Image 1 (cartoon, one colour):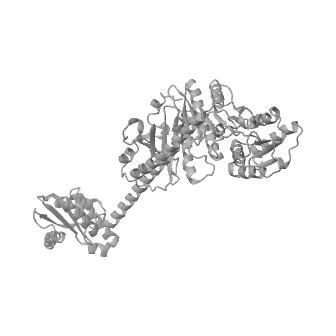
Image 2 (spheres, helix red, strand yellow; image 1 turned 90 degrees about the vertical axis):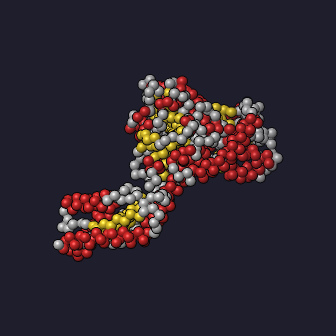
Image 3 (cartoon, rainbow, N blue to C red; image 1 turned 180 degrees about the vertical axis):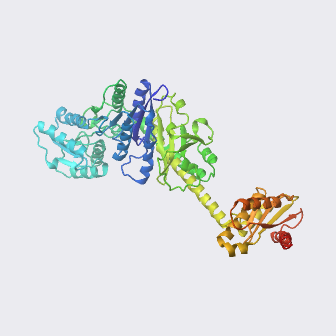
Length: 625
């Protein structure tokens, strides 16, 4: 529960399919009437192949916060990964969240499914019992497939009731899709006589049979009767309109809502529950059409969706190009405020916003285990600052969003199979087009943000490489080549009326340290002198290791003598607490180049070198007295 709302989550796949749209619309309407709110966690593919990219999509199920859930619905029939389903149900069970599984038979769950066998029997009986067609041919699905074999058995049973034994030549296999069914239909046309009726195990094969027959001048239903099964939308505008048996997802949603309500009342809902598909009587069997469906309106809708899809694909290519080269997170976020992305917010992982993390690197923990960052929210109409929040919160303003009754939909963002975050959608109507667009928006965000991350990481590597070539490995100061590049930039930005201070530091007694204590200690003395030089000079100074034990700093302004004193004081502090058997000291020469003087580096180096040797000579003279 969250606030005053009981929370129900739905896990499904292929959010853009008509089935999901119809089911979610009906389920959310029922749950809202019960005072609940619906969260939907979806993948754009059905996870059938188990490919690496599908693993990235599947990470969205790890976002589920079971602690706020009162019930969980898993559309097992849509998600084609048993492993993913098992993980979801196992976690929910451990958290004592009741689970309703659609399709399949999962232990400890309320299992609800369409009784396809009884539904298919309705179609077969309509053809054989109601019409009396006993000269029938059956187009099955895949050989040795459970659903196909069950439908063959139903066909055999009903035919047997009418005294007909089904022989092998009365069954063909269309494998549930069109191409094999074309071959089946062509073979049937070669027979001396067509059967009176052809009963197909699904609608796709039935529509294909009609199409092939029509191409050869065979009329359905005048010359042969055909029926299908599933109730897909295409049967409403096929020629002729198809007699079938349809799964009513509105009824399924109502039954699930009833189960959830019973669970809230403390009733045991575990076990099997069935919804029997409804017979759809239409023209292909010889009956008058009972369906009221405006084909012109539907085809116009499909045409508009296709046209807009093509236009949006072009737009998303442009968005991706702009986003990938945006350079900063703020500029990246601004790329997504346009007419093509709406009712959407985007959350990114710590790794995704961190430019130092290689894009291929997968997190060792949960994909959303750390802090999440809100990249943008189109409802605010302006780019968001990066807001940190826990993934358990799902989105920063979840409580406010629950005031609206429409479902909140989550889909994972991934690039190179690595989860980058997730997108959240909450539309304020049940327009089918919004659901169709979700995979397109997710893919556009994947390409845009993934490309941005790759380019930004490449730039980070380039910068690191440049620094590696510009910096001295021992001291961390610029090497001579790197310094000269930065020195030219320094001069380009220098006020022509400014002075330049050049500080040259030369380590005293390096050879005795090396000879007596070894080169590691000599390196320690060099790096100490370098660190002290950098500490003593102003923050924006250019510091360079000129040679073995010579370091130099350049900065704008006239030195007032404090730098040399700070070097001396800091070395004294080091020597007093280092515990080394030697002291680190340096001779320092500081030359101040007035405005108008040549800025040639070699000349400035020579002048500061002379002053440094004067300081070294003074030290020798003091030690010799």
